[in-house]
Image 1 (tube, one colour):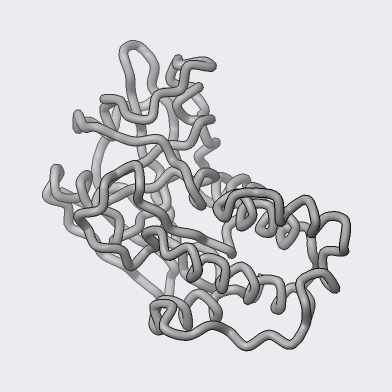
Image 2: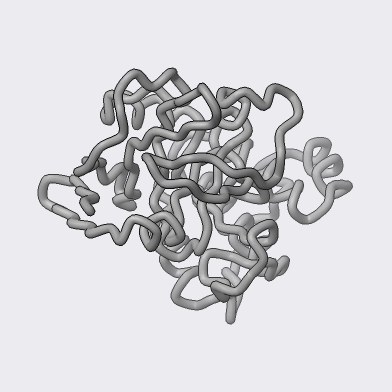
Length: 233
């Protein structure tokens, strides 16, 4: 999905100016769907358009739709990836137009780590991860534990995030069932820490933040030619 250019432009411009789009949104998604989408909150509107974009083939219409999404995100000016690090954990927001639910399975295969599956090994270092996709997204397989349960989690490492987040599916696998907390204490690869529920525009990914790296005093090595990352202590 050719979204990387738009994300890069957004991060560099920081919403100082909007994309100029000649094609109306209704010409892409249709009048009836757009009418329903316009009734939603701004955040839900972006989520709905993102789901539509995930089903579209690569082409000019997808490019236009992604530009509409970026403009909507800028209008919200909530707290994107370039937000100040002092933003409250529950308000932090970031979006990845190039990471879909289907990609998580591919990432799990490359890491040889099935998301939310039972972990049968003891956490150890070094941890080796991958750089995924054209945007070189950094994914690392870690073990998250709570009480007697330990699961495999393929985290997306985001250096701009002060905190670490888990998706609903991961928290459910840790034994929370339907009562998913927005904040809880777990052990991430041997380190006790507070994590938060993935929400807003990154609810579909487990996000590894700087709090974990600071806690373990981690050393990160990225090999771009091999598309590999190593985390050591």
